[in-house]
Length: 290
Length: 261
Image (cartoon, rainbow over all chains, first blue to last red; front, top):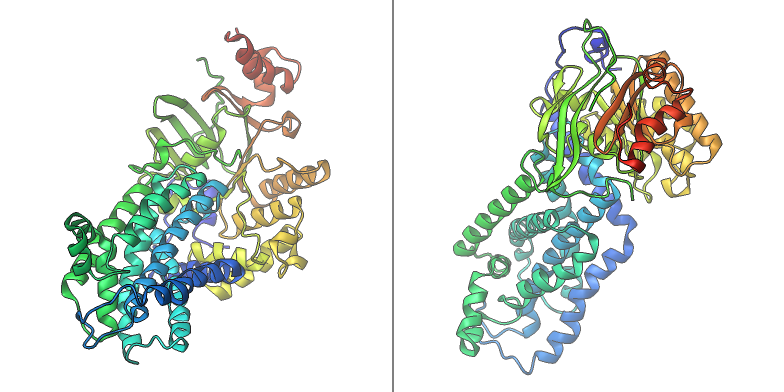
């Protein structure tokens, strides 16, 4: 029994409980991380699906296209590289992209099913709850990326050993950007069924109109317009940030763009879920009557 | 709209004070000028048909939605301006099932404890204690999926009590339960009020869940049509029992569109 709250019943002046210290915030963050991790462990299909997708690209698509698409020497590569090697950073980005959108889907699901409510009625500030949820999603996504990279390693798609350490912050920041985009999208989706729309209008265009599958100079040769679209796509910068990080190099432009978009998306998501100005109260959900 | 107001003393801070609250979804008005008060350590029933605005009101009290008009205070703490203090005193059982089915009872409760900043040692102690209270102590390690509907409700109530709230909101908590589970959950919540001094707002459309001593707030199409103790409402409406009063204040109006006199 918390003694600070107990005497409230008869008091004329509302009592205040002590503010949450840093420890309280950490406990809350840890709780959200643990729950996300446990949920992930219980959804093995989701884990397998998240691995099968990039592996199919790596084993089948890349193998088939190896002969069709020659990749010349472009930074950060110092020699000719196999197409498999070229698309691996893009596939890591793809895992983050799908995972970000997947958690957006699960947020819509949570909102419809009411689980989101249990999170949002926590007395911690809402921005903190959302950022914690975001961090939890990114952590799970990073685990998926590393399992994928390990399998790719055995497939003889290798980066320098230290690259796997350098790439961690790049993956983390990219995951944060894509996760916060997912969160923003989730606040805009009214119902679960609209998720196929997210696939068609967010995931596919972002993935294909980027440098994930082909270097931008090739795109430019093919279509100047598509080249411009690729340049305007934040996913391109996430992929390039990851690609250069694998070789221990910092792509400053990509870092700046990814950091800027992350800030914008997180701010947008927090505003969208803010009870006083958010979009939530303009939509009548089924309110648990479902 | 004429309200039947309850005359409560103003000496103690109300457990819940809802004042002139209104809410619209776009142009559709879901709540209009809703005002009522729940004193500490009392059991209040929010009575209304489906679509009367009960869930919207609960969403406002729990700060899921921002307040558009009016104000809501929990033990004197404004839910909009001082939401941290207000939410710490509030426990809530949502109508929809909100437990993670694949996780164990303990994992679900630990998550909730963390959301309230309760450390793991303290959380373990409280989880044991609240599960004992709802007579679910032996199901600690079981997956929620293996529980019956009534047992899940008990776990949800245990979860809502984990951070020692002084006000408990329950949104149609007995929906979908068999008669026995309904009765035992209702009896359990009433015991919490008398033994622990917790205040409860119990939303329902089932009249048989009302006791003669309860405070009733009747909601119809987003407006409060009556607020008071059962005998007062009976007297003012001239009804023989609360069912008849409910019909007069909620049902008949809906059907004929006329106001009761």
